[in-house]
Amino acid sequence: AQTVTQSQPEMSVQEAETVTLSCTYDTSESDYYLFWYKQPPSRQMILVIRQEAYKQQNATENRFSVNFQKAAKSFSLKISDSQLGDAAMYFCAYRSASRNAGNMLTFGGGTRLMVKP
Amino acid sequence: DAGVIQSPRHEVTEMGQEVTLRCKPISGHDYLFWYRQTMMRGLELLIYFNNNVPIDDSGMPEDRFSAKMPNASFSTLKIQPSEPRDSAVYFCASSLRYRVNEQFFGPGTRLTVL
Image (tube, rainbow over all chains, first blue to last red; front, side, top):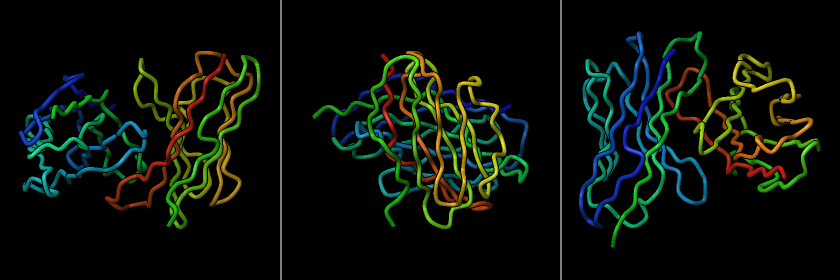
């Protein structure tokens, strides 16, 4: 079974600075997808960024980028130019690419990000 | 599109009562997921459906929990009888098969069992 670990329960960053959230996972599969979800106080789960394991290039979405290290099974999220609206819980998630696995997501425990003005 | 719709948004009930949570997935999505989120256990997958058929219910905590999907546009998660430890936020999500597209989550139902 796959597991996802987020070792930082809480992180804080100064507005306009850069912060990196860590995520590691354990899997025996070679093809899979990784996601970062944001959960603001409204509780809505919002996809931030996704990465296909077969792609070597790190995904980027505006101020959000990832550092995907497949051999190390590491998938960190970098938020540049942090804004007050970035304050939220961030969840790392894994999804197998196997057709037999369905579309199930395995989530990490989350990291609470606080942004200081 | 209105996104995934869940009702009610908040539910407060007393121990022993039956609770029914409802979900309407995004039109055209053929996967539907029910998650539970608590401080202690984080986000847990309870059950998921593909084309209205339950595929994996191994996450359902016990027989008090049941889920149905009578058609492609509606699903329910029922707890009978409810217990205080069932207090959590319950999310419904839907997605398309064989796509990297993300699961789209509903706003969640906050359940409090007194």
